[in-house]
Length: 77
Image (cartoon, rainbow, N blue to C red):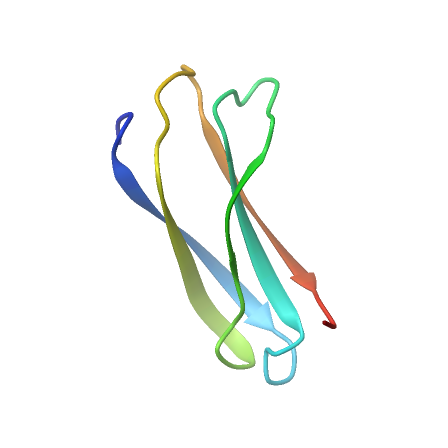
């Protein structure tokens, strides 16, 4: 992976019931030591149970140690 490249961030999740009440927020930071998180995408599961979800983003220029994270949460609306 290098700056300017399109990457695919993948997360394995377990959605409750039919998955309609859960959501995954994908983030990146250009500095893993002092991160400022930038939202890449919000993805809702397509069903309940275990599954793999993903989002793509372009690695920004700058920052020697970048990071990504996924927050999988209940979202009732």
